Image 1 (tube, rainbow, N blue to C red):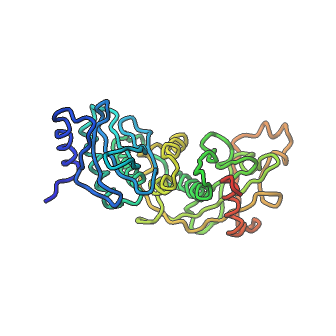
Image 2 (cartoon, rainbow, N blue to C red):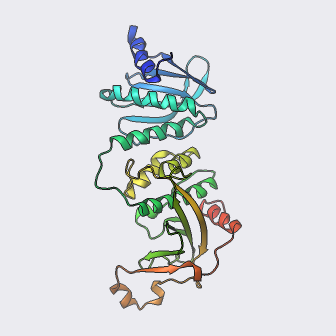
Length: 329
């Protein structure tokens, strides 16, 4: 019976330690279509697993202190090739690293298409396990709000050859969720089954950039065990497109959703509609209110009923908006 990858990895370090074979690598006993997965030591003696990449560099993850996932090019004796390096940064955690690396290797063998995304998904589960639990965590509605933003982020990134995330600015305290130049998109998500409404917070939330345009992306989700959408799943999908995972995780940290806090609930997207927020769209903006009164009003919240709003833009126009937000429209 074949040993578990973590057991083979642990045994491998002892072999590599014999005779000071620091610069050599050793097969871990698992092969994927791109080649043999190997283990080795850096010149500083840090443990690492090298997973061959058939299609060149993929998703990376450098946000954890103890383990880093990065793309490297290395010559292991058969020419220079691309690898995903999974490296333990803290030797005191070597034993834990071996278990983590073993789980990653097993997952990649089962799903070798995008090793980086597969390994990041495993790492996220470990982060969730090891993170201290504080309170009850975010509400389901908050999770759905974040999920909606990630759905729109994926649509925009797909249209961007450079795979940027700099348009996701709502996390930086700006009034809109996405912004590039004079174009802005505000996201609203709901779990309501009947009403097509959303809440607006503040006078400026539905105010377009000066001289620009604002669109509202409204999404209806349903909580479905085994559904196709989840926070961790969306992260994997976005990083699989080539977005560095630290950019996604940094954005989520800044929004109060560090790894391990969003749970593993699954959802289905039932509706996505995009509206141009212009003169005919019902809203409260600063130009409608006396300047003195505007400065005196705070904590304004109101509800908009989409069923009495102008019609949403058509799918072709929607894709054009996403492309423009991506910087290619």
